[in-house]
Length: 423
Image (cartoon, rainbow, N blue to C red; front, side, top):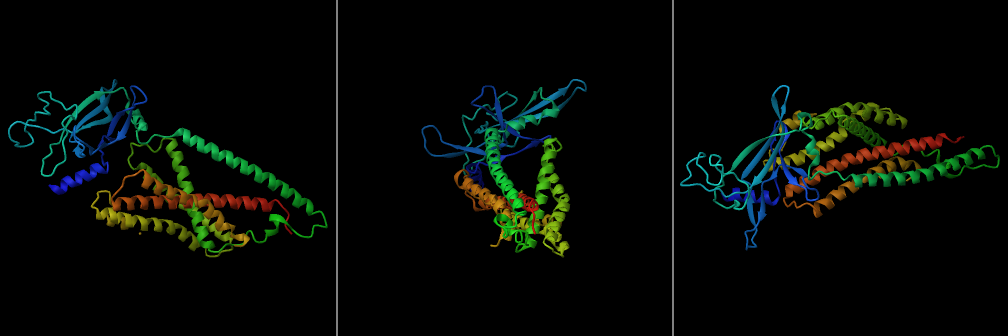
């Protein structure tokens, strides 16, 4: 059919991959490394097809991977004489299958792929082109190989994914630069702060010091409640909830509690921790609200519980509607969605939160830059999904970094004003 051929060509142009699972192990495609001999890395799944041209022609054609050579690796236990699967690999080929006589059914003998005659597919010299009104024959073969990899270590090879390599040098370099610059700024501030505190405390004993100067002069304004203090309390509490969830999740992952064999375990743990950390979120928002002499602390805790999830749910609802409109299997049913969770000196409060949280704007702008320079997404729905999910991530990052910056400024301000004598 013309529609089917067009859809296959679009999937090949967009570099779609096919993913499979065997014994809870994702399918991988081994790729030899060019920089190291006898070394390979793994790619999740395999591409639907590829683009190319015949020899002597410049016209681009679409070829589909219609033969899959699976390799199932197993490890034998010498004590129990049992075997367990420790690897699931594939080599995809594009082959224009041929057969003798007329096609009758799936039992028709192929001349290009016949296990009885030991004719196995080993290359793609005669690829299968995606054409209108042309049938495509899909085949596969399976090879079982014994492996020395034990069942407990079968996930180690997935750390060498070709598209998920960790750039340790860049990470360490960035951390060192941040620590170095932070240390310099901290040293300058502390030296200035200690000098000012010493000077202020000495002036207290001198009668000629009639007026306060410097940052001590604004001690009456610095802790004045800001405008929209309720909203600030809500966002600070939500940031505490995020921080607690991320820290505990990282600790659990480092200790090995979140095994990749438990599919969906990471997301489940994060959701449970998010709910549990709501206790600390409510306490933090209510405590800050009472600092502002507020009396309706119960309302603040309720706002903290519902504000961020409501915004995320609204964005996710729109994105899910787009996926649902495209008839994608990745869409969450609407029934399930409804069934789940139904310029004075005192202005530093918001400034500290917004300044720290502004790094989320950089994150979103970099995502946009990456979209237009690296990705080749042409479909409007795919682009909206990308920017929608990045908006959610950036919003969460804004809440997290804003809270960290706010508490750093808050504790620092309380520290310096508690170190001097105020009349």
